[in-house]
Length: 276
Image (tube, rainbow, N blue to C red; front, side, top):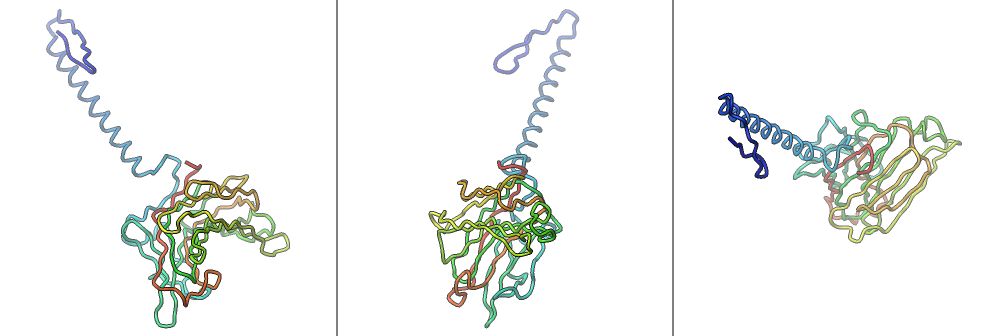
């Protein structure tokens, strides 16, 4: 008696004891059980891969797949007057798989928004990436940045105090440029900083992925997969939280010239233990 198995092979079962039919049935049941088990494993792995983009180094993310801001990951930040606008919750919305931060005007007042992960997610080192579609109007700038709760506590020591790490700042008045920047408190208590303002965008419109690889030794910044700045200055060793914001002030141009509302759109924020 032969049983056909995988890839055209066959197994001969000796039938001298009268149990050939039973052995055949048991063998078939084993094959079915193994097949079902393998299918379950493959299905679980597929689900895991869909839930964990790119690889298993993902430690935090928001894909903005809901209809409201996830208040288990984010808080509204800096509500009230800030620079030349007023930060309000209504400036933050989630729809169609994206987060929107919108600057808008009501009467003589300008409103915008800011959110952060302080108290929810604070991390040391790793690769941070934002997929973003930038705002188009003058007078405001969007930013994806990291901040520390101990900022400035020990002047001159960013390993303890942390630093402000601006992964990107974008102003529509310079449509092909993205700025990366660092700010920290110097030994004398003054504000120190360093920045790279680069013409890195072939087109300002459309989606762009902006990232930071933060290690104990250096920061490496990326735009659309291309390295744009590498520096070992003011490397933070402190836990940092994420901020997404729009700011309104003259550094971004004249908001009176803007056609509002105008939004920055974020497809996702992902944080990996190391660059994928």
